[in-house]
Picture 1: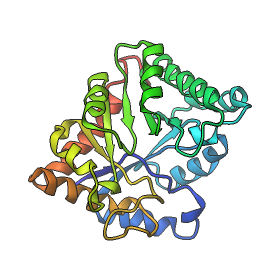
Picture 2: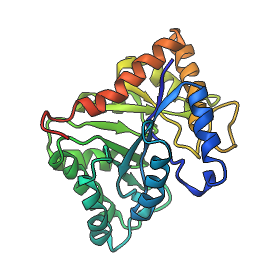
Picture 3: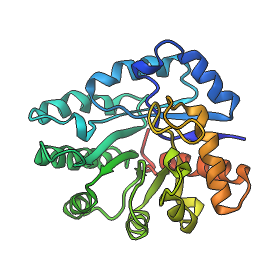
Length: 262
């Protein structure tokens, strides 16, 4: 069984002491592909250090997370942009909009998001990992402004309703399903039940949002197996089917890049 974690921050300081064991546990549980999005320029060096530990399983990404955006957003983006030419980098993320706590730097967030979505198109439809929290209306406005025919990426930690899910799928996005799907009374389970498996990918968002029975503890890629088992239960299908299809979906993000991609 081969499983894929499409969103993990295991380069962060929470894993400094035991990264080798975390990787070993992931592989023991069938997780052989792990995407590594960053949150700002300063995250890139530790992310690439983690990638170097075992490059055959890691898929590095670079981007500016909405919560990291400041008034100096243009310079923040300028420092990240050159990394898109690095052959190790497979995608742009974690990007998006987040107005959960406040609307500080709202216009700067929108500028960063739209700019990085443009980078995706300018770089052979490089996959994006989109963070959206209390900002669906604004995100859809950005897509309208960009006016692209389709997109290539994942709506990370999807938390919207069925209508929003269907709109995103129509645009070309996969929906990122993580530990929240295992939480009691999580409406995400109802969404997963109604969405075809071919539109879903699995993710941990480690070290955050650990699935049941690890809720409240540090999350890690090995726990993708619990998420996959929950999806299999919801859809009443075999775990192996979930593993195979969601991994194929994740790899499709790379295959969808234009023919002239590196």
